[in-house]
Length: 336
Ligand code: ATP
Ligand code: LTN
Image (cartoon, rainbow, N blue to C red; front, side, top):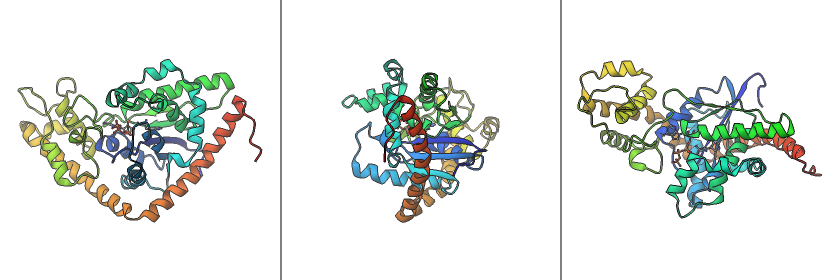
């Protein structure tokens, strides 16, 4: 049960593929460090994944393997509430209500919607458009203070705040208005192939998955696109040297070294030495995570226990908020 003296954190990731380095460095790694200080809720956003066509068997499998990856990345199920979004039906129900308080114009402005339309031109469905209302529901059900996400989700978090404020203005204080919580380093890990676009599972060549074998990680870093400047020195300048700056962010995130320390370490060595060094550091950081995740994926009963207990705890909180909302908007109380 929640400790009322602590603030609350909540976040989710779609189980539409294995977790990648962007998800890890921009999100999950930072979540693990918050468990003692906050009441934390993290979920597999399986309902969100349906906005893009999924193979049903794969989606089911990935929702559970993502849980194993969360735990392997350091999310202790004793300290965090870990659950599958669709197990808590209040998400879909509040999502509908909030759809009615989210404006067409607001939804039309979402960058992720525009990006996904471009990538899925043959399936621009209503769910893709109203995705942010469901995300607002995911968040507001738990009254969190902070929503830890990567930079790309900031716009959705801001829309959530606007919807919460709009609802509170009409019906009186109902939702806590949450803040996005974005890490300083790692908030936007870029593709190793196209360092001007974010690392994303839809671009497997530029994307390092936490379950990748060491030799695959090494190859992806060796082939990482660097910059065409003539000096070829390891220097942080995201405007003019996006490739090497991205590698520096990754190296800094996995080793804890500052950009100045990295520049000194590779002074006079050029990109040829830097790229494999980043690959090696990532391999070592990912090794224990991959091994632990593989071990847990084999233990289905354990994972089931974790998501069962998670859904039980999450439902308790979500049901309370939804009851208040139903009452405020004028729905008749359910008699049984
Ligand atoms: P898609 O491939 O569909 O764009 P994704 O790989 O971006 O998906 P999400 O489920 O959208 O994955 O993101 C999960 C979390 O990881 C979010 O908090 C998001 O901000 C963060 N995240 C995703 N990609 C990156 C990235 N390249 N750098 C930093 N954080 C990221
Ligand atoms: N939209 C997010 C995933 C997501 C989420 C959430 C994140 C769904 N619901 C609630 C934080 C809080 C994404 O695409 N990364």
